[in-house]
Amino acid sequence: MAEIIAIANQKGGVGKTTTTLNLAYSLHQLGKKVLTVDFDSQANLTCCYGIESPNFIETNIAHLMMAKMEEQELPDKTTYIKSAGGVDFIPSSISLSVVDATLRLEMGSELMLSSILEELRGDYDYIIIDTCPSLGSLTINALAAADKVIITVNPQLLAMMGLQDFMKTVKKIKKRINTRLEVAGILLTMCDSRTNLCKVLKDQVYDEYNQVAPIFNTTVPATVKV
Ligand SMILES: Nc1ncnc2c1ncn2[C@@H]1O[C@H](COP(=O)(O)OP(=O)(O)OP(=O)(O)O)[C@@H](O)[C@H]1O
Ligand SMILES: [Mg+2]
Image 1 (spheres, rainbow, N blue to C red):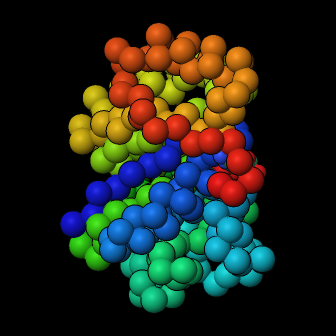
Image 2 (cartoon, rainbow, N blue to C red; image 1 turned 180 degrees about the vertical axis):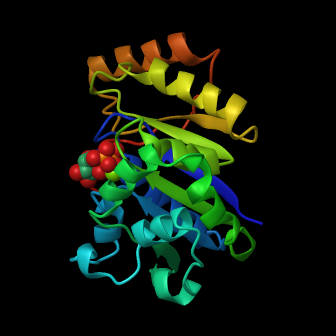
């Protein structure tokens, strides 16, 4: 049975997609069966898997979400699960932004993604969801589907901004929708440990959040290799 992990932070450009891609590939290298879900209408993860025109893919996560909302049967898995470098993935496209708007009008729509992924849990060891940079209905759906959330934080930007709001949302979702949800940890990405600013911000994250959520000892260095 798969563990479902959401990679999230409503801030943009903090390494969510890069973490999803590399974590999934690393778990595959350890012999695990992994599915990633591109749950961002920017479709960056889909592009990372070599799909240059995500809008032309016949079935993507937006279609599955729409089908769930319309109480329709999902198509066969083989039509929407793609594979690259040993990792399976469900692609996204710009049409996920329409889903975002529709979800807001739909009653009880928080568990749409969850109901899609529950059907796939038996096929994988890990399902990793790459989320979009917002705290809207798509991210709520991702957190409602997840067992754990990894919060990526880039200590070079205004790292702490919005983190409190994000934690508040996690708490609410855990209480109201998904009691399984736990913060796996805060992952510091793009750390340039040579700079003083990075050290100062890293200490600040530890000071403010050490009591609230685990912070991974491992940090991701800022390097083009990643
Ligand atoms: N450790 C790293 N070192 C250097 N560059 C990185 C690192 N991690 C990510 N990047 C680069 O930083 C940019 C933002 O990363 P990424 O797309 O993973 O962030 P994101 O949080 O998914 O962004 P968005 O919120 O727009 O979805 C990308 O150009 C990526 O290649
Ligand atoms: Mg991204």
